[in-house]
Length: 80
Image 1: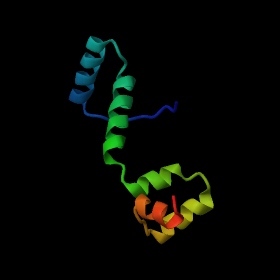
Image 2: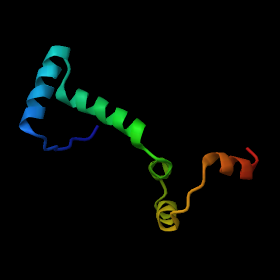
Image 3: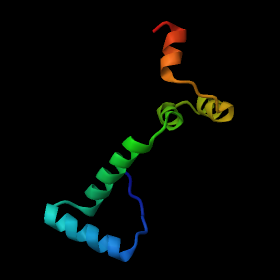
Image 4: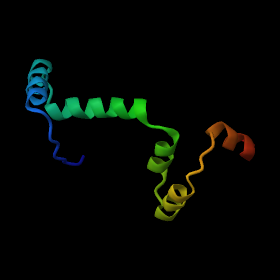
């Protein structure tokens, strides 16, 4: 896990604190869950490719070319 500092509105913090108390969870747990759900709903194909690539040179090439095709088309081209 990584530690981050997040600035939120006071009223949002107070609400999160109350919900965390009622659910017997930490504010961090609530934020992690919300962020995971947001990521699942909002990641597009480009972001998924960028997040999955670990080699810096390939990642830079992907960013520079910015040409993406659907995975189904790639599978068809590769005979998968």
